[in-house]
Image (cartoon, rainbow, N blue to C red; front, side):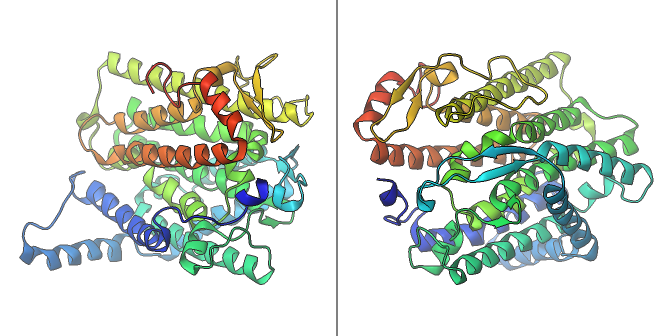
Length: 445
């Protein structure tokens, strides 16, 4: 069954034509939404008549040409962070974590040097010193958003091509369809490594969430320099992105147990998303706040209490649900000693868990948050994404793009996941679904 799952059988995402449309359309959409936020007060602009189509496109192009060109500053900053993250991931000590058995490698397990937390602290200290001594002002990041976004796209397309060609030339490709565009999108290699660094796990944590966090910090610095204070809304985004980057770093040893590392290939879909899509489409609220007066998105005290409470509650469920599943998988491998990093939230470990034992050999967890939903982490994750847009209220719909896009991604991923589980586990999957009845929200769906 594992051999079957490691072969290409069907096209996803609409096949070759679908992935070409995604690779073409998404960068264009990113430019369009940024232009609407920065230059048109968050309004979705469009041609006013048939005669205005060409002038409209020329106006859009002029914004990109002037304010999103891949200039020297953007290359210096993006490349500087990229190679700095690569360097410290290589040299800093970390927590050794064994991954899941990989069927395509004869069920060999790979080791992962989990040093994201050390790298995060090194990044925070380094950036603080650079800002303090005026070597690199953090306020400059948000002001150069468009330029940095373009460079990130070039990195996304370029690294995707390099890793595709490397896998093909070294004959390490897996699950290939035979169509270049589709295989470029999905990826050719499963476990790309550079020395001690697992590139897929490195790119998932070190690039997107570092940029997302520092975009929020940059927005706050700009507010402080402009108004003399930081709004609760911008502080919310620092907290929200800080939650995420710290969770990914402190719980990095849990990532090798996830579907992204265990099964998903490293292609354009994952690479572009980590290098460009996540950092430059998840924090549109920061872009809006950095370019608008705080009076346009001010809440009542009760409103702030409510949205902060929702964020913290969703984060708690997401963090502990992910930890419960990962610790359970580690236990099935005989791993009983777990890493202790800050903060270890109560409920992150399930004692004496119940589970469905499958004929395949795997165990399906039915305890903790996983007793109530097959994807409790997805529900909490999406709730957090909704608050990232809601923090600016209803002044513009664009910051809600993250949550709208994210729910489509999550539903699609669940469909893919559930289909593979049905094939992999057969009747045991039916037994599991009978025990854990709800896909997402207990009692509803």
